Image (cartoon, rainbow, N blue to C red; front, side):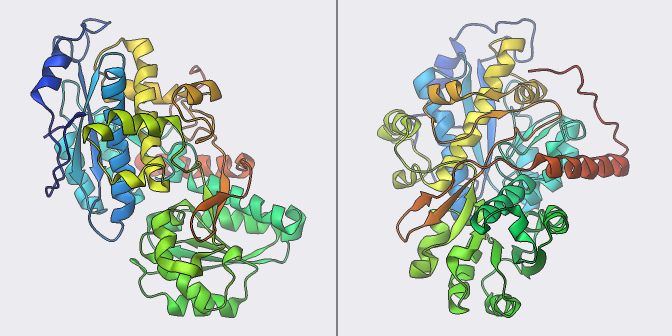
Amino acid sequence: MSRSPGTRRVPTLAFACALGVAAFAAAASLPAAAQSPAPGAGKAMEQFVPIAIYRTGPYAPGGSGIYGAYADYLALVNARDGGVNGVKLVYEECETGYQPDRMIECYERQKAKGPTGAAAFTPSGTGGVYALIDRMTADKIPSVTIGYGRTDSSDGRVFPYFFPLISNYWSENTATIRYIAEREGGLEKLKGKRIANVVMDFAAGRETQAILDAQAKRYGFEVTTFPITPPGLDQRAVWLQVRQYRPDWVLFRGWGAATPTGIKEAARAGIARDRIIGWWWSGSEEDVTPAGDAAKGFITAQFHATGPNYPVFEDIKKYVYAKGAGNVEENRIGSVYYVRGVLHGVAVTEAMRTAMKKFGNRPLTGDEVRWGLEHLVMTSERIKELGLEGLMPEIKVTCADHEGDGAIRFQQWDGAKWTMISDWIKSDQSMVRPLIEASAAQFAKEKGITARDCAGETN
């Protein structure tokens, strides 16, 4: 079943949501599409948006927070704005358990729903992105993954339907090394330093090895990788090995319950938490609270700010939660995972709004939304209009660049809350982009893909 504002989530196995009859009637009475004939013409002015979620499994806090907030933002756009330019958003949850095979099942179940099919799909996990590349490309449905996904899919010439927006793993890693250099007194001070790379041994965890090796070669530091077997509930041996290595800094790519487990083992091994920098998937409240005092001083990368005091969250409380239509616990509004879900909603709806300038105010096909994503420009003025000022960096997406060249900040846990401890730090695209293009070119060669010519595409 589908969902619109005003209905309360009923926790079923698929976590599907209900859309009231009144919402269908209101949507049907909206003006006809601006461009005719067109996909969806003559049908209800509704846009179907699937939500692949994981409310179950070892990583459930991330899935419920991110994709519940994604639904909340879609509900806000319906309730406050009447949809996107008069097109109501009909959305539906499908439970994946963070398993790639179940993500495929959800995708196949949801991709053709609505008058024009799915506007976009959010594979809930990097493993799901890898599993769905061929299917989504063939179906011309864009993948939107804020801060995750296959890094080389940032090259839109080879991956036209994949958008790891704001920042990808390689960009994050270069910004992290730049932050460490700032702490050490300059990039030249990295020479001879030892960095331990403690990572979950799955697709997302392994994503940064290539860029980290390249940085080590350029700056003269030493890096040794210490893999963690998922779900990462027994890490004592790993952290004892890290202690024996005697690193100057530790990069920690934990996920779910593996993060507080790792933080506690690091404390037990006598490794200073303010010398450990987590990726952004180790940087939520749910990651550090279970670790107690052991988490104090822990630092992570972040591509957005956090906290409840932003206009967009006040609107969500007013238009969604006040009506009993929220999708997560209200006290999680403004938390790290919640912010990421809202940013997913912003990306998809703003891409739709952008695409409608070309294709008309009507339900869009996935390919048309893909065009909107490739022409998405989030200026500081637009970010402020949406009630997000200070929450996210400016981004500009193009045909060739599906990342958007966002910036990174660093936050530190003080025992009760995250505090930002850096300004926005730009990634080193002089290193990142050549590696992305080389990896994408290799993928294109293996798959027999001819890369698109983006020379004539402009925003």
